[in-house]
Image 1 (tube, rainbow over the protein chains, first blue to last red):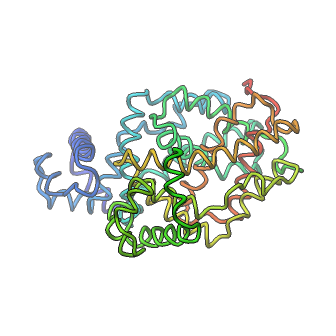
Image 2 (tube, each protein chain N blue to C red):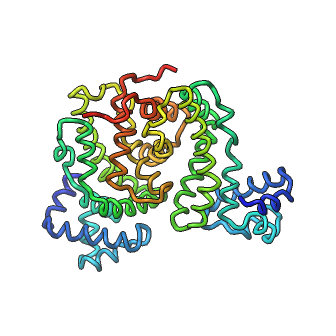
Image 3 (cartoon, rainbow over the protein chains, first blue to last red):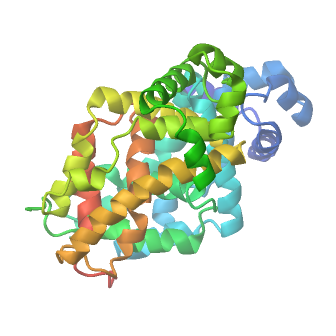
Length: 204
Length: 204
């Protein structure tokens, strides 16, 4: 986000901004990304389209920021438990099963829309993927500092791949929304053993 | 597949069947699943629609079988190398990077179509997911028999999740098709340490 954009956005109150993001998510759940129009957002939020474009630049950024707004921010600090297992479990517990099911449906829709839509991919990476990865990197850095994970562990580069796999395969193969219980067992069975493995290269 | 379906399908030669599947994949790459019609398949393959429906029941099963036909069959036996690392690496080497990129685009399209389409999900699971999982189970059983993987390893239930994560996150986050090199490093960094971990439950 540029400084100009920040300055512009600061003209609306945080309460108004939250209300607006809520309405965008509501519409997104109703019609999906492709059918969502700035006209509909303007009508639902009683804003002018000019204001929306001035504040957010466009639909992609507005949607990505709305989804981000809905997630717990500063998670890495909220879950500083003293162990990597504690931190990853605590991160999982920040969203209850109902919230997780809701988010899972939303993210699936967005993941599909991304492929025909470079603007959405860019906004999605900037406002959703990067901040979440930064949180994970802080959790991982603490684990490295404590000596739980080796700084050269090749699995560190694959934390997003492991986590996305849990969500995508759970939805697609198991046809169930991810739950806290499922994620906790996946973290214990896959993520921690991969990260904390003593030998970094298998020898056979 | 029922016995009746097998008997019906046996009326056409394997060469004709292969030719037909190739045409279905070609059309699928051109227009995607939703826009693919039995009329277009009939025209492209110079078949009657009645024959297509009699032999395959419908679009979903025809597409799933065409995708399956394009993959190396009996892979688990082809790659019996004597170690789990050797087997997983050899499985990866069965498809070259070009083939993998092609398949990845196709599978992404199908994964999207699946969500609005219970017939496709059913056919996809029956003809694609189940056979691939059965191959993986045979590779895993050999590793358990050799003592490389503990029979109670909780990661055994998550092999599909780990592998789907590699493909999905690579495409979405890294914006690159999966390559052999990427998959080999993922197998070494994530899949093998998770499966071969000595402690099955982390203690911290």
